[in-house]
Length: 115
Image (cartoon, rainbow, N blue to C red; front, side):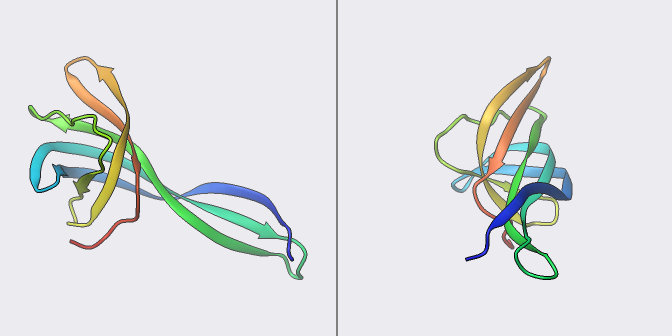
């Protein structure tokens, strides 16, 4: 068995834009999103030449409501529809008070899927 060393998580993509949050089929809020896609990488040193193995991806980031919407803090997954119509199931990690804006730190619970 090969030993994995030097596991690290690196950013591989940045997603920014205006999207819509849904709970089930109901539109909840329009949001500006700023998301970072990271991926885990493991370096296998027991083989020559050493190889890097790609691991799971993760999406995290911030949502800021545009207008009057408020995102409910639920234990159920919500859906963010991005500008390009891809969708991301996510959970709110925590709300962040920021003056008159509603901001939310989120964690994706899956991968981006086509509309």
